[in-house]
Length: 106
Image 1: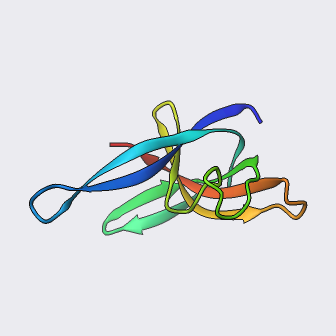
Image 2: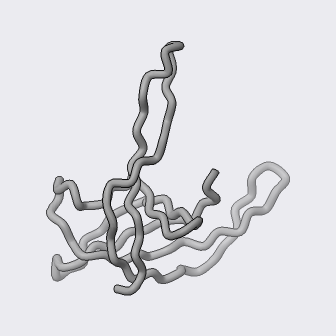
């Protein structure tokens, strides 16, 4: 595992006007192995968008543990952001496979 990723979680705070302000907050770091999947295309209106899914492997943490990534979180390495879509445990229970997609960070 050679890539150091920052695990981020979305925090919502009241904005005082009946809505919420959102911010991504670092929750910890993980060492990972990253592999791109087979690319594809998605059509959005009149635009065709290229997509590459990612498989990111990290050390396992028990279900419910604070160190276990969740599908509502994301990973960051430098300016690159990977949204976690699903989390699966390997058969031996020693690692987690995170299915993710890369996004452009704002």
